[in-house]
Image (tube, rainbow, N blue to C red; front, side):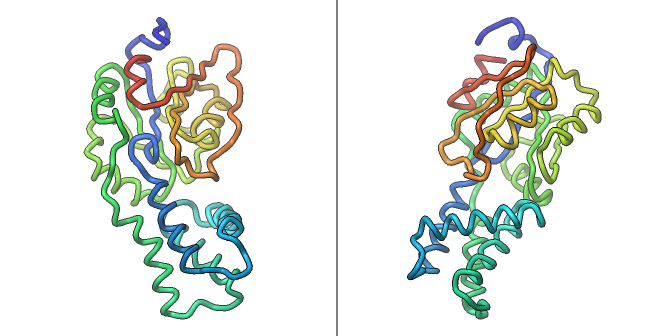
Length: 237
């Protein structure tokens, strides 16, 4: 992977945040496990409850976007549907507590991020590009201590080819010298490739299942690399 194209300095790296720079989905998974245990459905298995929740989350994110507020709505809606009635104030408070527990988590940087990001920033232009609730994402970036390494921050509601195209236009990026780096095939890799960018997929064992998708093949002139950890980027760039 040490070729002349990737090793050139002065390229632009669009970098995802959640589950690329720091842990994120594991906290939602813990909240979901607590929710399913609390629901304790007598007809559906935990796996079936999770499938129902996935359906609700897909609909909620399309309508309300991402973040804890949308997740909170998803849990309440799912509980109402599966319990067959309105949620009492006591149960509502308990369900909300599961969702809000995500907000109480400290920022846990993924292995290699703290050491690798300064190296990348010294050689390339870094732009944080992460979808979600703008206030929540900005807060996580501030608490992470990584903000100084990024020349700009973009928090679109959805990461699709249009969003990537808008960022490229806004910052006058050259497609041949711009890479998207992240752990989500659905949001980081495929739309970036569709836009004409290069991409690097970083494996994460707990990527949100709604972000799973078969990765597209790069077109002629594009690069798609896969690495096991953020630290490997130091060998590429």
